[in-house]
Image 1 (cartoon, rainbow, N blue to C red):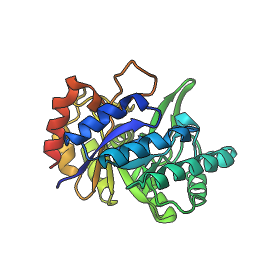
Image 2: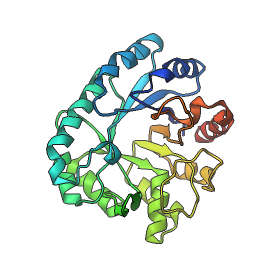
Image 3: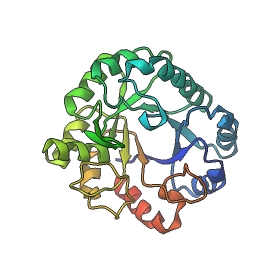
Length: 266
């Protein structure tokens, strides 16, 4: 199956607009998945101009826990919904092909479902998470980290599904499951979107490594990811030019690896 390949950028990545345009015009990717950094709406005209200049399509990744959005926290409901209004602006003005949210960290799935149901006039997907994430004071449990939790969210909220293969592997390792069988199980939930990166095959913690820097059997994973339409590359950021940087597609030393992944996905 042939996927539309996504380049991951952040809304503050103004310095990457020119290389992103060049890569798009060379046919290296099909769309940009743009992480909507909170309070960055002033950047919207730049991304709209890029779409107008070269015809590139956009998807939107909503802010997640590290940027303050946590649907599982009842004390953050007002702020969560304020951020969702910013996400709607990005999605609407860039005519996003999809929008992705994370369910939350440290709270209850019922609270996540309740708040996600409050997001109106926006069609979105929810992404599966690793089981645990490192925190300053230890680790925290993620909402949407196992099959039944994701299924509950999909059933009760009525949203679409984004299957992050790296997150799935980490969750499976924590649960003591075979990671490839777990990825195949999640794929039964009919994801529209896939996220892909490398990692230590036995890790419980997400790393978003470059392809080839980890030990995941990526060819095997790609054989399991069948049925979706979009595949966004979510590998580690390399640039030292700013604190919020794009995926390794911008870094030439990783270009050949990405090309091989793209060929395997076709």
